[in-house]
Length: 271
Image 1 (cartoon, rainbow, N blue to C red):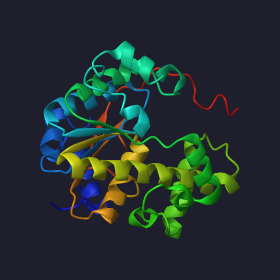
Image 2: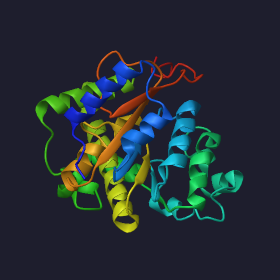
Image 3: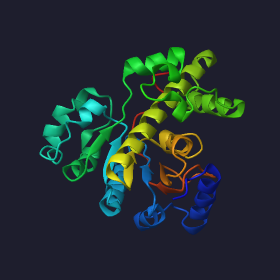
Image 4: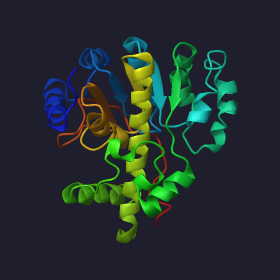
C-alpha cells in the first residue's frame, strides 16, 4: 500500500472542492478510504455533526480497532464489550465529566463500537505534556522518539507555521516566547496517536480508525506525516471536518462541512 503524502492530500482536497463545494459525503469518504491501513477522522471537538459523520463512517468502514485521542491507554482498557454500549456506565467509568472534553453524548455512539472491536487510547497526560513543553517531546516520549522524528528540530518554515497556528488557536493572546513549547506538546500528542495506530494495525490488521481533532489529522505535519516517517508502507487516509468551506487548499484527503456548533466566544477568557 502507498503512504499518503502531503502533496497528494492537497490534490485530493482540491478535487473534492471541485466535485462538492459543501464537502464530501459519507459514501465519498468510504470510497476514498478503501484500502487504507489507517483511517484518520478529524473533528472540531464540540461539533455534534462531526461526530455523527464519524459514526456513519465507522459503521461502513469495518474498522478492526479504534484509537481515541480522548482517553489514556489505561482508560481504553475499561472500554470492554460489556460496557461500551452503556453510555451512562461508560461515562462514569471514564470519569468523563471531569475530563474537559465536550458532552459524552457526542462520543457515546463512537465508543459503542467498542462492543465489537478493540479500543486504544492515546491521550497524553498533563505531566508528560508539561515535560514536552519544558524540555521537548523527545525527552518524555515513552517509545522510540527517533522513529517519529521527535529527536530532530522541525524545518524553520514548518516551525514558524506551527507557532502561528498555536497563536491563532489561542486567540493571538500568547507570549511569543512560549509558542515553541506548545508546538513540542503537539508533536508529543501526534507521536502518541501515530504509535497507537501502528500498534493497533500490527495487532489487528487494516483498517484502523483514529478519532481525533483536525490538528492531529492533518497530513502535512500531523499523525499521517509521522506514520509516513515511521512506516512508509502504510497507506493513510485522513478526513478534516470544518464549520465553513475552506477558502484555501487543506491538508486532508477529503473534508466535510457542518453548521458551526453553538458555543460561547472561545476568546472571551483571554480578553
